[in-house]
Image (cartoon, rainbow, N blue to C red; front, side):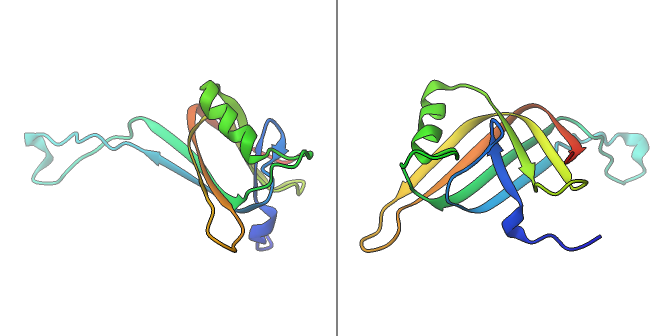
Length: 135
């Protein structure tokens, strides 16, 4: 298996990539409730509990109409409190693809003098995260 160039890993919302993204990341976790009892012989014991996941991306702000999800559309998704279908992966056939439904849980925009304006967005997964391969 070849190494994957980070440029090729993207977050898509409704099948459309986020416009001008410079980063894309996913975090998956499982709660580990304590299951230690007097019978544990002094060793902590746990079991796998609730799983959760988030996606996040940073990028440059561009309100121009295009075939990509723009910053103003991400703001509208947050305001509407609607779930959106999201994916995390490449476009290469056979590569892993992670998909599910999520809310835009936060978005921030920055505008420093004489610098490109930027954004940061986080998606909170709701329900199952599905692992498949790019067809």
